Amino acid sequence: MQRQRHRPGTGFTALHLVQPVDGGVAQVVLDLVAAQVAAGFRVAVGCPPEGPLAGAAARRGAEIHVWHATREPGPGLLREVRQAARLVGRVCPDLVHAHSAKAGLAGRLAVRGRVPTVFQPHAWSFEAAGGVTGRLAGSWERWAVRWTDRVVCVSEAERRTGERAGIDATWSVVHNGVDTGRFNPGDRAATGAGTGTARAALPLLAGVPATAPVVVCVGRLCRQKGQDLLLRAWRPVVRRIPGARLVLVGDGPDAAALRAAAPPSVLFAGAVPDTAPWYRAADLVVLPSRWEGMAVAPLEAMASGRAVVLSDVDGARESLPPGHERFCLTPPEDPPALAAAVSALLLDGPLREAIGRRSHQHVLSTYDVRQTAQAIADVYREVAAVPRPERREPIPQ
Image (tube, one colour):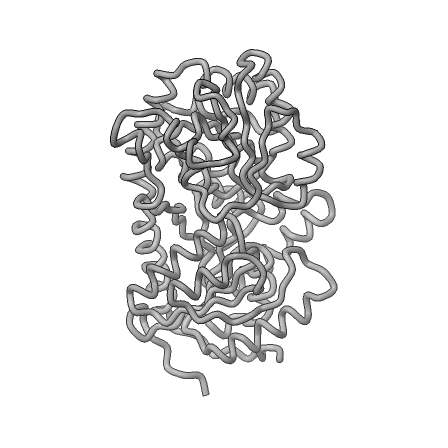
């Protein structure tokens, strides 16, 4: 017998099924876990044990259930689906919230509508994969909406991309949010100082002259985030601004290739436990992604009072303050345009500072993580309030 369902609040059980366990997706989940635990939810997280998510979610008060799953679909999918089904059986949640493509695939196959289900793509998988794989991913998303009570997109652009792909879902748009207590301008706001104090705390920048502009890119080192495009754009930037440095913060499958292609003016910080000091040390933050839903790193950078340069993919325009598009957006996969935008802002300090101040205020008013958590709670409330028809499909064991 299925236990009585609760409305969101004290006693409500939410199960977050998550893969990947790092980067922006993990940060979104951690922020939701903290808010939901504070609101009296019982929160469970099913995720692979590798990476930072499991430990960080446990410290925020979540139950952790190991779910062995790779990032990409493969021969282990059936095992992953069965594990997810057993996890749902143990937790007995009021609602399953599946994050990103892999969890959305395995979770919905495991549950098949027996439990209220929210799917949050965090960027569509069919954008990442071209050819036959991309077409199959699109077909799956069109099919899987029958087992999805709500699709949560992080931007209107991501929702429109889903609609253009023929996904006939019940949609909610909930923008990503930022912990504005953690991400803030630091000494620059308090004293009017530049980035010198922030740089002094980072050993990697110890040898960089105080007058040298520093550009920072925070993100997994992979094709999606476009660091290879940034390296192609960086050479003309350095020709115009010889002392400039570029720091790539993060790790990933493309790390070795990027290191091999990088000139001496590019520094690699690797994976770091806290990205906030890197934003404060930057003169400019760049993210030349090939696709996104709405990237978290630019929001964190703007909360830190930094100007950003972004490729014009889903969510980028929505993340910027009105009127900043002509300074801060470049066409996707266009290294010359990227080089021109980065150079222009590095050479115009007053404009860069003004953009950073306006960006900080924009995030405070629009992208505070507390607004995000409340909007997700509202989605849960709406989904949980809908009467459940009897489901005849068994959950696979």
